[in-house]
Image (cartoon, rainbow, N blue to C red; front, side, top):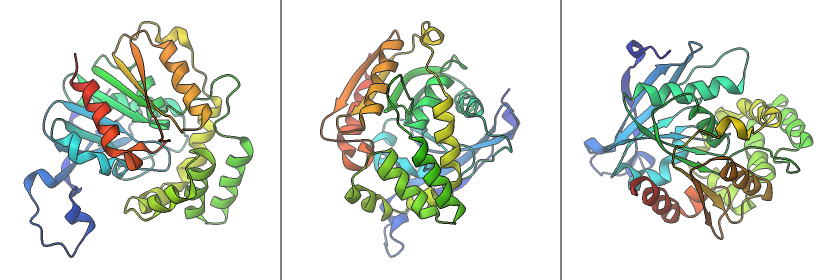
Length: 297
């Protein structure tokens, strides 16, 4: 049960170009301020999310090796039409954590944020966050529309996270090479080319990714243990957009197809020429597809 008394607000950050350029003389406007709020999840863990924009609520759930700042490139377009609630999943940012990790707690976290908003909300998840969003939709009746981009699910015959890669990440973490953990995840797991990884390393959000490096192996192992059970989703009639990168790893594209076949009210849109990070490499295309779906009938 969500404890509504635990909802708190304070300044989270500035979501304008000025925030990334301290030398800028641009005046900070009211709409450039992002507020951080927190809800208490079912197991008592505080889950933070950053709120900005104006309009119907849209909850954003980032993937592995990220935090709420992952959505920064797409925020300007989305905030014009929606009140964005960008979640910090447990173990990073303003959110707490628990001693014994279980992916089911992440599903409850997302549902807690949605239910705290007081009415129907749109829900968008990327990669591991898409899996969390999908499962959260079974825990709450307050999801209006669902957007899932390259859900991190291993389906029969398709391996996203090889055991040897997870072991490599754990070894890097053991040596204290948190940057190496994130970079290796981007290359070996997300399938991003070196130039895209270097571009992402140059962004301000990279340090948040490094800070959350310890959460990566546990999440990859959780995905390997997860099984998509079609029967559980047969009655989930929430309108769903399945976004897929045309150049995303085959296993991620197959996962999207499997989820689309499982859901009774779903359709797929492929973003040709782009992979698992279209928010960075095809910002306009990504936001156009999301807004067209959310604002459509």
